[in-house]
Image 1 (tube, one colour):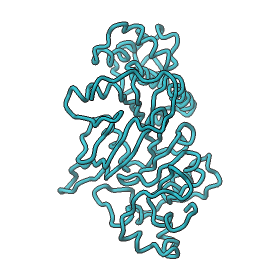
Image 2 (cartoon, one colour):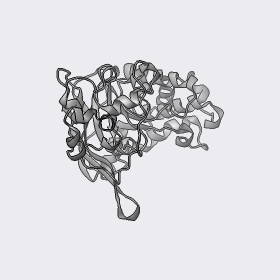
Image 3 (cartoon, rainbow, N blue to C red):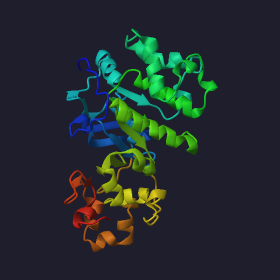
Image 4 (tube, rainbow, N blue to C red):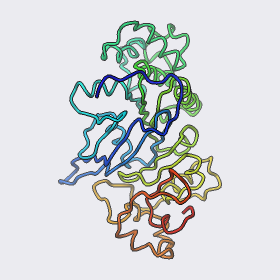
Length: 343
């Protein structure tokens, strides 16, 4: 991967993928010789200039996928392509790649070294990548861009001397100091008070609008996705099961798993609440057929049998297929394919 050009300084959403995942598989050794297929054949594009939300329950594989995007874990199969080039896993290539793809961690307290000042925390990435010319100006600009103004007031403070919301802004500043093309934000507001969550979400949208950065946000919260995402990808047991434009997907979900996740979102008050039964996803025990069928309300209620797809649900794997008359909306569900209406 060659030298990265500077990204755009304003938001331009294109149809061209900035990041492409093709056939991505990540597996881990588990207990008693079992293999956990955490990411199991994922194809996904992240378009330049967009906010894409990757949504699912704990254990569905979304954080492992994010770590693969960052090059922190090497896939067992498939590839990560960034700006048209395949990611290589030698040290020099990874270093160049990680300048363009930065992580925002879930816990700002754990992400920041308590012995470093805020200035040192933001400057650390610049020093690692040898970008120390004009360092103080770059640190000040990154802090200001992240809402910490005047930036000089924060230079000599330590993380424990600022609030949780301000610590998360410092984490964003450290990432933005490198002028990345892509931010991967893993549950970026889950550890924050409700009063601060909105401020950080507004910051993310401002970075997209004013700095031209692209964001892949990993979350269990469809409500967060509803508020900031251009598109939503729903993940279950290692695979994407539904993907589409936010308004379309959340207004008319086709997959029963998406509908169950959506039913607990306050913004979706018209959706009848559904409690998923059965065990949470276990990547060491992926069932035959549709991997969601043991918990699927359509199978349990007999609706899948009425649609004459119950046997397929239990025996046939299911791939993503396009929803009729809705470009860009795809779903992996036998029942959704049987009827052209939301399930």
